[in-house]
Image 1 (cartoon, rainbow, N blue to C red):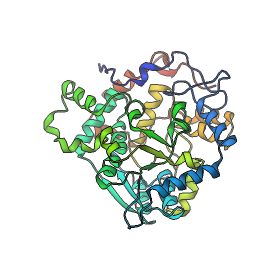
Image 2: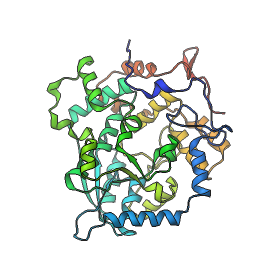
Image 3: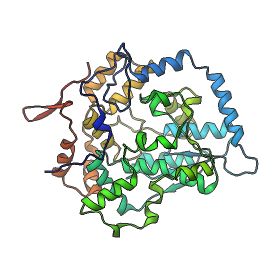
Length: 397
């Protein structure tokens, strides 16, 4: 029987009593979320703040001043945009180039396993007018790290997140491009630490806690070498690990890189509008059918393994893919809370069977081992058995 470690720090800090937001469909099981005395979550409160208090014209002036500070006139790139070819990074890169006359270098950390639509969208994005650097890491090593992350962090996709965050900043230091622009600030858009919800960038000092699940890459590697028979030092050399770790704080300071800048701080962030924008301007195409686990068909569709990231989040926190889509659309005024609940009852927690065989083969595990790992992440205050079937003890209502 599989027994996991406690490397993943977020699950150790969850409240034992489940509370659902009275306005949207998020719960207090999301790491770093905060509820006020009326039972409203920090993401909904931030949505109110953006709607009623933020002067978006002033924010745009703030953006222009920032861009002018970094703008170059020698033809060299003046901003890096991490880009999957998706709707969100597509909006950022396209508007920086064509609305604000910047010269973005788009950089891509390859997914674990491209979908056809994901690859096509990246190519369409490039051909809408961008130079792109695509990094595909050591495949043998990445598969083993994905298995390690699946077993010990409850998320095989986490190894992708490490590179997705670190690779752009390695290039920023190497190429002397200190401005790096991402799309949304998750702490604001999906609820999190309010201390960083209304900030233009996330400082490097907060990355381990908020992006790396409380464990550094070196700690993860060391654990794997000591405890996993499938990972050993012959699998890699130091250069294979380079892009999985961000530059040090000292290296960032020397390069005058302050952190991840968020476009959502300067422009009101609406995922559905981003989708329509990129259909028109970057050739973006959605899936022909809805994505497993939700009702939408245009978000996070470039990686065959992506569905298991959201499925494991559902297992670990009782919050899956449909919740994320519905909660944001409730805040955006596109659907009501009752409609969101109905969508969750229909799609939340749906198993991503389309690429299940690919997932098992990629991690080199059996179906039996898969379910042993999954069940090890079911927390007793969230899950109970009804006969032989697992059920959430406190579903949305």
